[in-house]
Image (cartoon, rainbow, N blue to C red; front, side, top):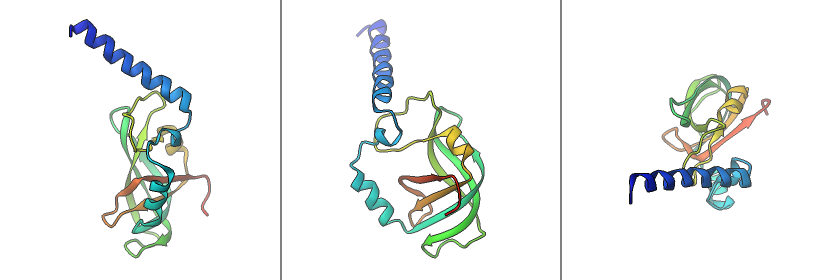
Length: 141
């Protein structure tokens, strides 16, 4: 395949990705695993925290993990965290114009993540988000 052919194919892939994003609309719709898989991840998370978001640091690229820093407001499940503890959680995120790879990752919109005051994080035993399960909250529950 010629260099021009490869460039056209790459351009077509980006165009197809953009078209899919337009048709599907929401971030959650881009998730390619059945809803019960995400529900199971939430149900089996070792820790569930509500945090007061204090700072969000986006990745250097258009998508990746945002470092969400905050203070534990509520511990809904688990014993690894305490109310008042400072935490930093890596949350999958993307800028509005990003074209992340299609897959099971649910990317939070960076501006929405930065605007959120609270978040609910479903964490594994190592303190990592399980299957992108982070919920933006407008107010503390």
